Length: 350
Image (cartoon, rainbow, N blue to C red; front, side):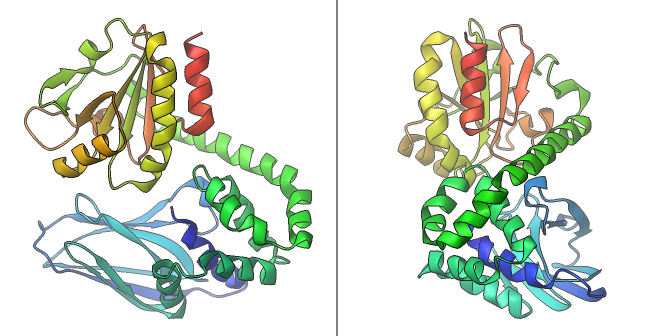
Protein backbone atom coordinates (compact mmCIF):
# COMPACT_ATOMS: atom_id res chain seq x y z
CA UNK A 1 0.00 0.00 0.00
CA UNK A 2 1.41 3.39 -0.93
CA UNK A 3 1.67 6.35 1.39
CA UNK A 4 0.32 8.36 -1.55
CA UNK A 5 -3.15 6.98 -0.89
CA UNK A 6 -3.41 9.08 2.28
CA UNK A 7 -4.54 12.43 0.81
CA UNK A 8 -7.26 10.67 -1.15
CA UNK A 9 -8.50 8.91 1.97
CA UNK A 10 -8.64 12.27 3.68
CA UNK A 11 -10.74 13.63 0.82
CA UNK A 12 -13.06 10.63 0.89
CA UNK A 13 -13.62 10.92 4.60
CA UNK A 14 -15.28 14.31 4.25
CA UNK A 15 -18.38 12.81 2.64
CA UNK A 16 -18.97 9.59 4.55
CA UNK A 17 -22.24 10.26 6.27
CA UNK A 18 -25.88 11.04 5.53
CA UNK A 19 -25.92 10.23 1.82
CA UNK A 20 -28.31 7.91 0.06
CA UNK A 21 -26.94 5.13 -2.10
CA UNK A 22 -26.39 5.94 -5.76
CA UNK A 23 -25.51 3.56 -8.62
CA UNK A 24 -22.09 3.07 -10.15
CA UNK A 25 -20.86 1.07 -13.13
CA UNK A 26 -17.31 -0.11 -13.80
CA UNK A 27 -16.78 -0.93 -17.47
CA UNK A 28 -13.52 -2.73 -18.15
CA UNK A 29 -11.65 -3.80 -21.26
CA UNK A 30 -8.58 -5.97 -21.71
CA UNK A 31 -6.54 -4.82 -24.69
CA UNK A 32 -4.13 -7.77 -24.77
CA UNK A 33 -5.23 -11.35 -25.47
CA UNK A 34 -6.27 -13.16 -22.31
CA UNK A 35 -8.03 -16.42 -21.66
CA UNK A 36 -11.80 -16.20 -21.41
CA UNK A 37 -13.42 -16.90 -18.05
CA UNK A 38 -10.52 -15.31 -16.16
CA UNK A 39 -11.83 -13.75 -12.94
CA UNK A 40 -11.72 -10.03 -12.20
CA UNK A 41 -12.19 -9.22 -8.51
CA UNK A 42 -13.24 -6.08 -6.67
CA UNK A 43 -12.11 -5.46 -3.08
CA UNK A 44 -12.99 -2.60 -0.74
CA UNK A 45 -10.76 -0.77 1.69
CA UNK A 46 -12.67 2.28 2.91
CA UNK A 47 -12.35 2.82 6.65
CA UNK A 48 -11.16 -0.71 7.34
CA UNK A 49 -7.52 0.04 6.61
CA UNK A 50 -6.27 -2.33 9.26
CA UNK A 51 -8.77 -5.02 8.38
CA UNK A 52 -7.52 -5.86 4.92
CA UNK A 53 -9.43 -5.64 1.66
CA UNK A 54 -12.78 -7.48 1.88
CA UNK A 55 -13.70 -8.94 -1.52
CA UNK A 56 -17.15 -7.68 -2.44
CA UNK A 57 -17.65 -8.93 -6.01
CA UNK A 58 -16.08 -10.84 -8.89
CA UNK A 59 -16.95 -11.33 -12.57
CA UNK A 60 -15.62 -13.27 -15.57
CA UNK A 61 -14.04 -11.66 -18.62
CA UNK A 62 -16.17 -12.21 -21.72
CA UNK A 63 -15.01 -11.11 -25.17
CA UNK A 64 -12.31 -8.97 -23.60
CA UNK A 65 -14.75 -7.05 -21.41
CA UNK A 66 -16.15 -7.07 -17.88
CA UNK A 67 -18.71 -5.03 -15.94
CA UNK A 68 -19.36 -4.38 -12.24
CA UNK A 69 -22.56 -2.72 -11.04
CA UNK A 70 -23.55 -1.61 -7.57
CA UNK A 71 -24.64 1.20 -5.28
CA UNK A 72 -22.66 3.31 -2.82
CA UNK A 73 -23.62 6.00 -0.32
CA UNK A 74 -20.24 7.76 -0.51
CA UNK A 75 -17.05 7.63 -2.60
CA UNK A 76 -14.73 4.91 -1.37
CA UNK A 77 -11.40 3.27 -2.08
CA UNK A 78 -11.31 -0.09 -3.88
CA UNK A 79 -8.84 -2.45 -5.51
CA UNK A 80 -9.54 -4.04 -8.89
CA UNK A 81 -7.45 -6.96 -10.14
CA UNK A 82 -7.19 -9.80 -12.62
CA UNK A 83 -5.77 -13.03 -11.27
CA UNK A 84 -2.67 -14.28 -13.04
CA UNK A 85 -1.89 -11.15 -15.07
CA UNK A 86 0.84 -8.55 -14.94
CA UNK A 87 0.16 -5.85 -13.87
CA UNK A 88 -2.17 -7.62 -11.48
CA UNK A 89 -4.40 -4.79 -10.32
CA UNK A 90 -4.98 -1.16 -9.49
CA UNK A 91 -6.43 1.03 -6.77
CA UNK A 92 -9.38 3.19 -7.76
CA UNK A 93 -12.03 5.47 -6.32
CA UNK A 94 -15.60 4.32 -6.87
CA UNK A 95 -18.02 7.22 -7.15
CA UNK A 96 -21.60 7.38 -8.46
CA UNK A 97 -21.51 7.24 -12.26
CA UNK A 98 -19.41 5.35 -14.78
CA UNK A 99 -15.78 4.34 -14.31
CA UNK A 100 -13.73 3.04 -17.23
CA UNK A 101 -10.78 0.69 -16.78
CA UNK A 102 -8.42 -0.66 -19.42
CA UNK A 103 -5.90 -3.44 -18.71
CA UNK A 104 -2.96 -3.61 -21.12
CA UNK A 105 0.18 -5.71 -20.98
CA UNK A 106 2.16 -3.02 -19.17
CA UNK A 107 -0.35 -0.64 -17.65
CA UNK A 108 -3.82 -0.10 -16.20
CA UNK A 109 -5.67 3.09 -17.13
CA UNK A 110 -8.59 4.33 -15.04
CA UNK A 111 -10.91 7.26 -15.72
CA UNK A 112 -13.90 8.25 -13.64
CA UNK A 113 -15.26 10.98 -11.39
CA UNK A 114 -13.51 14.05 -9.99
CA UNK A 115 -12.08 12.31 -6.92
CA UNK A 116 -10.64 9.55 -9.10
CA UNK A 117 -8.97 12.19 -11.25
CA UNK A 118 -7.51 13.81 -8.12
CA UNK A 119 -6.31 10.40 -6.99
CA UNK A 120 -4.44 9.86 -10.27
CA UNK A 121 -2.91 13.31 -9.95
CA UNK A 122 -1.66 12.66 -6.41
CA UNK A 123 -0.32 9.19 -7.20
CA UNK A 124 1.49 10.16 -10.39
CA UNK A 125 3.01 13.39 -9.10
CA UNK A 126 5.65 13.21 -6.39
CA UNK A 127 6.29 16.98 -6.29
CA UNK A 128 5.58 18.44 -2.84
CA UNK A 129 3.79 15.23 -1.91
CA UNK A 130 4.36 15.48 1.83
CA UNK A 131 3.14 19.08 1.81
CA UNK A 132 -0.10 18.01 0.11
CA UNK A 133 -0.79 15.47 2.84
CA UNK A 134 0.04 17.93 5.61
CA UNK A 135 -2.31 20.48 4.07
CA UNK A 136 -5.26 18.08 4.27
CA UNK A 137 -4.45 16.92 7.79
CA UNK A 138 -4.04 20.46 9.09
CA UNK A 139 -7.26 21.60 7.41
CA UNK A 140 -9.50 18.72 8.42
CA UNK A 141 -8.02 17.38 11.65
CA UNK A 142 -11.16 18.32 13.61
CA UNK A 143 -13.04 15.66 11.66
CA UNK A 144 -12.88 12.48 13.83
CA UNK A 145 -12.61 10.31 10.76
CA UNK A 146 -9.48 12.21 9.68
CA UNK A 147 -7.78 11.24 12.93
CA UNK A 148 -8.89 7.67 12.27
CA UNK A 149 -7.03 7.67 8.98
CA UNK A 150 -3.94 9.34 10.41
CA UNK A 151 -3.61 6.88 13.29
CA UNK A 152 -4.22 3.84 11.15
CA UNK A 153 -1.68 4.90 8.57
CA UNK A 154 0.89 5.68 11.23
CA UNK A 155 0.49 2.14 12.59
CA UNK A 156 0.55 0.14 9.35
CA UNK A 157 3.79 -1.97 9.18
CA UNK A 158 6.39 -0.64 6.70
CA UNK A 159 4.36 2.54 6.19
CA UNK A 160 4.91 3.90 9.70
CA UNK A 161 8.54 4.90 9.14
CA UNK A 162 7.77 6.64 5.85
CA UNK A 163 4.78 8.43 7.36
CA UNK A 164 6.73 9.62 10.37
CA UNK A 165 9.68 10.87 8.33
CA UNK A 166 7.68 12.54 5.57
CA UNK A 167 4.54 13.87 7.23
CA UNK A 168 4.66 13.96 11.02
CA UNK A 169 7.46 16.56 11.39
CA UNK A 170 5.48 19.00 9.23
CA UNK A 171 2.32 18.90 11.32
CA UNK A 172 1.56 21.85 13.57
CA UNK A 173 2.37 21.48 17.27
CA UNK A 174 -1.33 21.77 18.10
CA UNK A 175 -2.18 18.80 15.89
CA UNK A 176 0.72 16.75 17.22
CA UNK A 177 -0.62 17.32 20.73
CA UNK A 178 -4.13 16.29 19.65
CA UNK A 179 -2.78 13.08 18.15
CA UNK A 180 -0.65 12.33 21.18
CA UNK A 181 -3.60 12.73 23.55
CA UNK A 182 -5.57 10.15 21.61
CA UNK A 183 -2.70 7.78 20.90
CA UNK A 184 -3.30 5.38 23.78
CA UNK A 185 -6.98 4.98 22.93
CA UNK A 186 -6.18 4.32 19.28
CA UNK A 187 -3.51 1.80 20.20
CA UNK A 188 -6.10 -0.11 22.23
CA UNK A 189 -8.57 -0.07 19.35
CA UNK A 190 -5.95 -1.16 16.86
CA UNK A 191 -4.87 -4.04 19.09
CA UNK A 192 -8.46 -5.27 19.27
CA UNK A 193 -8.77 -5.08 15.48
CA UNK A 194 -5.52 -6.99 15.00
CA UNK A 195 -6.57 -9.68 17.47
CA UNK A 196 -9.89 -10.02 15.65
CA UNK A 197 -8.01 -10.28 12.34
CA UNK A 198 -5.83 -13.10 13.63
CA UNK A 199 -8.82 -15.04 14.94
CA UNK A 200 -10.73 -14.60 11.68
CA UNK A 201 -7.73 -15.57 9.59
CA UNK A 202 -7.07 -18.68 11.67
CA UNK A 203 -10.74 -19.61 11.36
CA UNK A 204 -10.61 -19.25 7.57
CA UNK A 205 -7.29 -21.06 7.19
CA UNK A 206 -7.50 -24.72 6.15
CA UNK A 207 -6.96 -27.10 9.06
CA UNK A 208 -3.84 -28.63 7.50
CA UNK A 209 -1.79 -25.41 7.56
CA UNK A 210 -2.91 -23.85 10.83
CA UNK A 211 -0.50 -23.01 13.64
CA UNK A 212 0.23 -26.17 15.61
CA UNK A 213 -0.17 -28.49 12.61
CA UNK A 214 2.62 -30.46 10.85
CA UNK A 215 4.13 -28.76 7.81
CA UNK A 216 3.23 -29.89 4.29
CA UNK A 217 6.16 -31.00 2.15
CA UNK A 218 6.71 -29.64 -1.37
CA UNK A 219 9.30 -29.44 -4.11
CA UNK A 220 10.31 -26.47 -6.25
CA UNK A 221 13.03 -25.14 -8.52
CA UNK A 222 15.87 -23.31 -6.80
CA UNK A 223 17.86 -20.36 -8.10
CA UNK A 224 20.72 -22.65 -9.16
CA UNK A 225 18.37 -24.76 -11.30
CA UNK A 226 18.14 -27.77 -9.00
CA UNK A 227 14.93 -29.16 -7.54
CA UNK A 228 14.66 -29.07 -3.76
CA UNK A 229 12.20 -30.49 -1.24
CA UNK A 230 11.36 -28.73 2.00
CA UNK A 231 11.88 -32.01 3.88
CA UNK A 232 15.49 -32.08 2.64
CA UNK A 233 16.11 -28.41 3.43
CA UNK A 234 14.98 -28.63 7.05
CA UNK A 235 17.16 -31.61 7.99
CA UNK A 236 19.33 -30.65 10.96
CA UNK A 237 17.73 -27.22 11.32
CA UNK A 238 16.14 -25.97 14.53
CA UNK A 239 13.89 -23.51 12.73
CA UNK A 240 12.86 -22.86 9.12
CA UNK A 241 11.47 -19.54 7.95
CA UNK A 242 9.42 -19.65 4.74
CA UNK A 243 9.34 -16.18 3.21
CA UNK A 244 6.82 -15.72 0.38
CA UNK A 245 7.77 -12.71 -1.74
CA UNK A 246 8.16 -11.34 -5.28
CA UNK A 247 10.43 -8.82 -6.97
CA UNK A 248 7.43 -6.65 -7.94
CA UNK A 249 6.05 -6.55 -4.37
CA UNK A 250 7.06 -3.25 -2.73
CA UNK A 251 6.10 -4.28 0.84
CA UNK A 252 8.17 -7.46 0.34
CA UNK A 253 11.24 -5.51 -0.69
CA UNK A 254 10.79 -3.06 2.21
CA UNK A 255 10.72 -6.02 4.59
CA UNK A 256 13.78 -7.66 2.99
CA UNK A 257 16.44 -5.83 5.08
CA UNK A 258 14.77 -7.29 8.17
CA UNK A 259 14.90 -10.82 6.69
CA UNK A 260 18.53 -10.30 5.69
CA UNK A 261 19.52 -9.24 9.21
CA UNK A 262 17.58 -12.09 10.82
CA UNK A 263 19.37 -14.55 8.54
CA UNK A 264 22.78 -13.09 9.38
CA UNK A 265 22.11 -13.12 13.12
CA UNK A 266 20.59 -16.60 13.43
CA UNK A 267 21.88 -18.77 10.57
CA UNK A 268 24.61 -20.15 12.83
CA UNK A 269 22.08 -20.85 15.59
CA UNK A 270 19.97 -23.29 13.60
CA UNK A 271 17.85 -21.03 11.39
CA UNK A 272 17.29 -21.71 7.70
CA UNK A 273 15.47 -19.17 5.54
CA UNK A 274 13.70 -20.34 2.39
CA UNK A 275 12.58 -17.65 -0.02
CA UNK A 276 9.55 -18.65 -2.10
CA UNK A 277 9.02 -16.26 -5.00
CA UNK A 278 5.72 -15.66 -6.79
CA UNK A 279 7.57 -14.13 -9.73
CA UNK A 280 6.60 -15.31 -13.20
CA UNK A 281 9.66 -13.65 -14.71
CA UNK A 282 12.75 -15.64 -13.74
CA UNK A 283 15.11 -12.90 -14.84
CA UNK A 284 13.44 -10.36 -12.53
CA UNK A 285 13.57 -12.96 -9.75
CA UNK A 286 17.30 -13.68 -10.09
CA UNK A 287 18.14 -9.98 -10.45
CA UNK A 288 16.31 -9.18 -7.21
CA UNK A 289 18.16 -11.98 -5.40
CA UNK A 290 21.52 -10.70 -6.61
CA UNK A 291 20.76 -7.01 -6.05
CA UNK A 292 19.57 -7.53 -2.47
CA UNK A 293 22.23 -10.11 -1.55
CA UNK A 294 19.62 -12.67 -0.51
CA UNK A 295 22.05 -15.47 0.26
CA UNK A 296 19.64 -18.05 1.62
CA UNK A 297 17.82 -20.77 -0.34
CA UNK A 298 15.57 -19.33 -3.04
CA UNK A 299 12.70 -21.21 -4.70
CA UNK A 300 10.23 -20.12 -7.37
CA UNK A 301 6.60 -21.09 -7.91
CA UNK A 302 6.47 -20.87 -11.71
CA UNK A 303 3.90 -23.06 -13.46
CA UNK A 304 6.35 -25.75 -14.48
CA UNK A 305 6.02 -29.53 -14.02
CA UNK A 306 8.75 -29.66 -11.39
CA UNK A 307 6.99 -27.17 -9.13
CA UNK A 308 3.97 -27.58 -6.91
CA UNK A 309 1.47 -24.83 -6.13
CA UNK A 310 3.03 -23.86 -2.82
CA UNK A 311 0.74 -20.85 -2.43
CA UNK A 312 -2.30 -23.11 -2.43
CA UNK A 313 -0.62 -25.63 -0.14
CA UNK A 314 -0.04 -22.96 2.49
CA UNK A 315 -3.10 -20.81 1.80
CA UNK A 316 -1.04 -17.75 0.88
CA UNK A 317 -3.44 -15.06 -0.33
CA UNK A 318 -1.18 -12.00 -0.09
CA UNK A 319 2.52 -11.24 0.25
CA UNK A 320 4.78 -10.70 2.08
CA UNK A 321 3.85 -13.80 4.05
CA UNK A 322 6.00 -15.80 6.46
CA UNK A 323 5.71 -19.21 8.09
CA UNK A 324 7.92 -20.60 10.87
CA UNK A 325 8.44 -24.37 11.20
CA UNK A 326 10.25 -25.79 14.23
CA UNK A 327 12.58 -28.80 14.47
CA UNK A 328 9.67 -31.20 14.99
CA UNK A 329 8.09 -30.08 11.72
CA UNK A 330 5.30 -28.12 13.40
CA UNK A 331 4.04 -24.78 12.09
CA UNK A 332 4.64 -22.47 15.05
CA UNK A 333 3.83 -19.04 13.58
CA UNK A 334 2.50 -17.36 10.46
CA UNK A 335 2.25 -13.87 8.97
CA UNK A 336 4.91 -12.22 11.12
CA UNK A 337 6.91 -9.20 9.96
CA UNK A 338 9.27 -6.58 11.31
CA UNK A 339 10.26 -6.67 14.96
CA UNK A 340 7.58 -9.24 15.79
CA UNK A 341 9.21 -11.72 13.41
CA UNK A 342 12.66 -11.10 14.81
CA UNK A 343 11.51 -11.46 18.43
CA UNK A 344 9.71 -14.72 17.64
CA UNK A 345 12.77 -16.19 15.89
CA UNK A 346 14.96 -15.20 18.84
CA UNK A 347 12.53 -16.75 21.32
CA UNK A 348 12.25 -20.02 19.39
CA UNK A 349 16.02 -20.39 19.08
CA UNK A 350 16.81 -19.79 22.77
